[in-house]
Length: 400
Image (cartoon, rainbow, N blue to C red; front, side, top):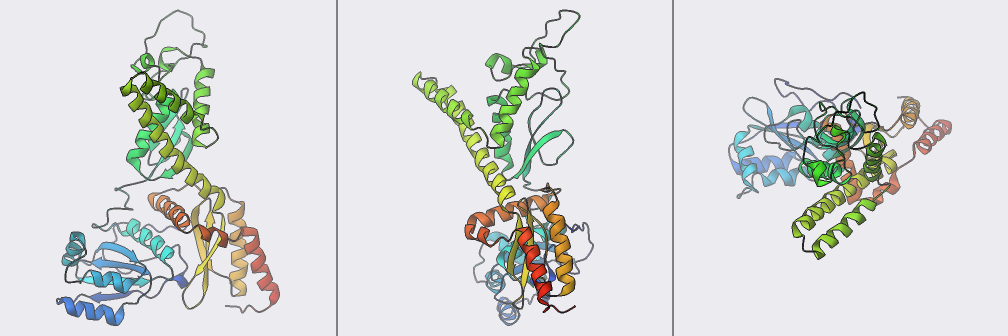
């Protein structure tokens, strides 16, 4: 993915570069806002198109203070100048701003992608989602030396032996990580703790006491106190990994049986704890299932409408958007596209490196879930190469 990040740009001079092909985007228009509400509405009626796109509000310092998207730019921007504002936030944005800028986009999905780029790049103060310091998705990881466990992180590190994500809903993800460690009997103590297994030989007998109550509760085998073998602990790690990968969901059945038994014996507090564990694991299982489906299914070229009756190709790999181009209509484009398609098809599935890439993946997953028929439009990389080669062989391409 090309580098799109431009932090601390002093003055707004245009939305900037995009992963989207230029042919999907129209010319940016900028207008100073009239003081009168009806004059502002008249300006929008005269100049703003009824097409998808992104828009931004500029304050008196020429800073981008809010970015939005809409499937109809004119209707959305007119709503800011209605007699009764759509909400309090819209009224604050309007009062805070001096200028409006918009960019037509050929498709609503592309407008969503463009909006995410702009929020990540410009970090407007009125945008609460998509910024590096706000509401970030995260990963569930397994790692941690001699006694690995599940942990939550927003940034992947060398500590992660296995990483799964990105997953939206960080508060719920934290709870799911705690449940994984408890239900699969993995430790949740700091990595600085010294771990020792009972199959390790020692010169002197030196009994060690477990350092937390979880050993007494039966939710941790206490690798901190040599109460289990490395083989037993590793088996717990493997079971947790298999659940996260969707290969073994038997833990849910066992927990449900334990909950029913606890409820039948009127141990309602224990039953409530087990109920919460089941809820957390089911939530995580659904999120992981959607992610695995995206990684396995969303690989290829997604043709999508561009401007002036042209077609754009989005390159998807492992559920991520890693590039785009105009559908090849010249010899140069066909040759360049074949090269790019070959590189992408041979590469491993990428891991999102920053918040923008995480959010773009989540946007694509949600879009395919909302429009399942779109999956049938995906062109396998090999077939897309064949299309390019056939167009070259046809001899009707003109050199740009």
